[in-house]
Image 1 (cartoon, rainbow, N blue to C red):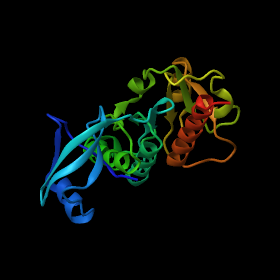
Image 2: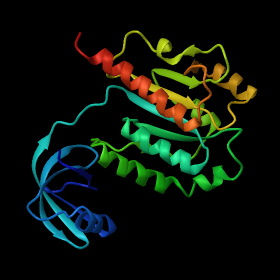
Image 3: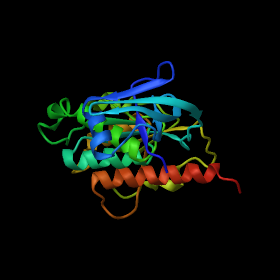
Length: 244
């Protein structure tokens, strides 16, 4: 299977990758002139041939436009910020699972200092999203927002909005999903911080009409819960879109 790379733009049938990214292609991946790859400008996907492969510059010539694979559902993952190594693992895996947008959320129990530090990490998070997108052959990069306030996160719009709840009584996520699912649907999934939601936050997401849902009796780490929730949502919409 051909590798896929993201480029800033395709202009007059050509695209280029320069600097450190080009060095990675030529030194690590051994990209050479004449080889064929796929490239995406985050709008369209192309079959392209390497025209030039130098130390710090790789130039592609497009051969044809390819049909991109459309995700089964548009999912926004709103995740309360937690320890960065775990948060970054979640970004990588969520990207592989096709998440459309990731919203880092400052919640009451976000560890002190992480909210301010997150402002300096967003470019690294987007880089992780880029690398995971290339690995998983996505057609489009995920949007990764700057750190967002709790109030703004609650205002996230989607056709269906769910919040993962560790307290007993919440309906299982799979059972809460709508029985009729369309590829045009949008879903938002809100994932709590280490330590869980406060009572005040529970009141606020109830007022904002987020549906509390459960992933079962086990208490999962925040990053595990986010990925499990995404996998369930993807599977449900993929099943809905499959022929009987």
